[in-house]
Image 1: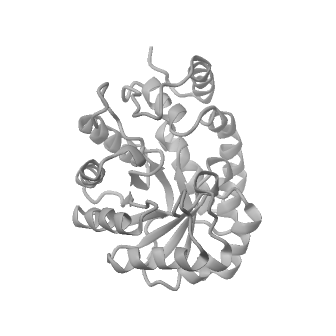
Image 2: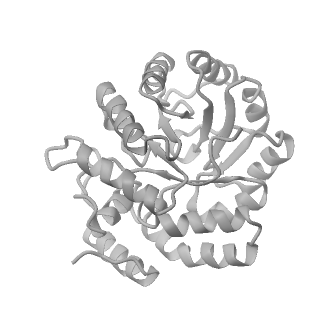
Length: 296
């Protein structure tokens, strides 16, 4: 059984001016996402600034999302780091507070050999009973998961899916070709949802869903329904907005965009800093053109 199909949002983590997690706003975002049709919520991913959260905060954010979602949609916890033991601690903690699945990014900075990568995932998988989504995003980690390694990792019983953010459609096509039907591919790039799902992907783990959750759900649903003409129109209509949320390093623009909707105060923890003025103006322009209501 798949963890989810459709649109999963890689949720931002609201913070107060002093940097503390704003749990009230976090709960409000979860409720809004569910009401807009989002099919799954990913807590403590890259977009959620997980790398700046202390262990207790990391687990507390996951727990808050789990409690607010209350079983209405799956909650997937980002628990991947570049220290296997640390990843195990976060993964077992997420399991204890009720997460439905884990999103595990490849080791970054120290990287790993092929054998080290396999053992990293194997040790984490053996520490929990939860299903695991591999996360391949070489632009951030400098470490790709090649198709043959995906196939090997999927031999681990609870490794059931991959978030593919390599940007390499040929690689994704090869993964789709060699993997069994019950292994799920999710798009990790908002501008590639259509081609990845056309190759057999079953949804997206999305950044843009933070500001356009209903529209992103509609895009993935059109693809699940096989309505490719509608999906093409929806995907192309999103492109200018997608480009605007990557004017600067993620999640600076998209979190700023959530602030422009009036949902949160767009505060960050260093080394992330406030969006540049030109980023804000570009966001306002593209959000308005897309039909989103920017708060005055």
